[in-house]
Structure formats: C-alpha cells, structure tokens
Length: 296
Image 1 (cartoon, rainbow, N blue to C red):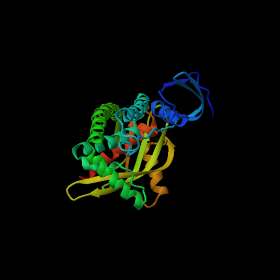
Image 2 (cartoon, rainbow, N blue to C red; image 1 turned 90 degrees about the horizontal axis):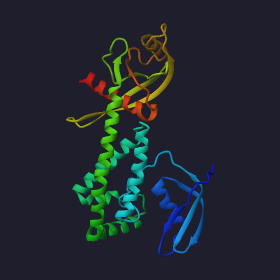
Image 3 (cartoon, rainbow, N blue to C red; image 1 turned 180 degrees about the vertical axis):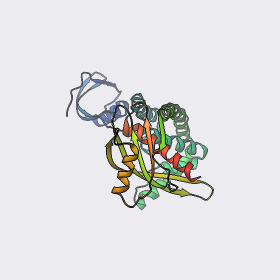
C-alpha cells in the first residue's frame, strides 16, 4: 500500500547526493523504508518527497552495527537513536519484547568490547569467503593500529552504553510492574516431577484460558545450572462454574496419556497486557523460577 506523505524531507549538501543515500538516511532517522520518491534540486537544497513507504514491525539493531559500514560517530549515533526511538515507542505500548532482550545483548556486547578491545574483531560479519576473511583480518589489524578509528569507536561505545542502559532500566521497570500484577500457583496436587507439564495463562477481560505444554531444558556447568523452557500451544478452554482449572487438568490427562500426573501451573494477570510481546515472556520467566524452586 502506497501512502502519500504530506511533507517533504529537506537535505542540504555541498555536492550531489543520490536518492539511494537519501533513502538510507530517511530509514535511519525515521524507520521508514522508501519504495519511491521524487527529487528536485533548488539551489543548494535537495528536496525529497516520499511517495510510498513500508514501515518494519521490528527494527532490529544488527549484531555488527558498531563496525558495519561507515565508522563515524555522528552516523552511528543516528543509527542507535533511530533504534532507541522504536524501543521507546514499543515501551509506551507496554510491549517489552523483542526489544528488551535485543538491548540486553547489545549492552553486554558493548561492555565486553569496552573492557577488551580485541573483541572488536568479533563484531565484524563472519559470513565471508576465505579470501574475504583474509582481507578482513588485514582490515582488523589496520583498525586496531589506527588511533583515529579506535578513538571514533571508543566515542561511539561511550555514547551507546549509557543510552542503552537508560532504556534497559525503563524496560526493567515495566517488566517488574507486569510481573507484580501476575500470580502463579499450582493447579491441583503438585507433582514431584516438574520438568514437563502444563501452563495455564489467563488475563482480564478474557474468559478463556490459554493452555500450553512446557518442557524444561537444563544446561550449564556443575556449579551453575541454568534452565531453558519450551512452550507448545495446546488449546483454549473457557472457565465456568462447571469447568474449573482442575477439570481442565483432568481433561489434559485423559487426552495426553504420556503425562499421567503432570505438573500444572496457573498464571493469572490482574491487568490486561499485550500477550505475545509482554505477558507471554514474563509468564515464561515466572514459570522457570517456579520450576527451579521446586527442583531445589
């Protein structure tokens, strides 16, 4: 669908500037991907009017954004601020994911690079031919030996870390608020085996309960055990006076014979939140905590 924009974009340059670069800069600044544009020159001003555009659902910050393309403080600043603008808009809708986990990745990555500059090499793209990899290694050594580039990277990192931290803190506050509005409790008798079972999730004003089958995965060293969890949607069930959560559990036992005595947990949210982007990730983490506590 093409939408005519009610305003043009104005750019001032001392020399010629291509539509391709204009499209790239507009995407960075606004998150809009141009499909077509009209261009007109007026003295030293170049005017672009967007004819049609596409807006991405999730503006992901590339893994190697720090070292990809032009290593320039102002350019990288615009890239990061455009991304964080989308993060802010998502948080205003109380939509935490996928931005929150994406920011955690980038924040930890920048902290690690700041502590050990040799990790900059890991920030370069690796999907290259053997010949390109050799060139990359040469370029990498050149960058490390180039004081000007390293100072530019340090400036970018010093700007980016507090910006990401500020937005992470905002996301954490929202996460804690959502979690505070949720309660988790077992359904029926608690099973001793909690690695596999069912999760019920409900929130107002819905009368139906979403039912998922869960399976935990244990990984890590002998001193640091971590749990991951996989959820598989089963069905929805409407709760009534004659169809309690315990009745739903019995129905699952009759239908799925491989779990004769399943651990079953219910998460009730007292407020309505975006399900996929917010409530579901919070519910998964609450379930992991509950399972870990039961296994301790």
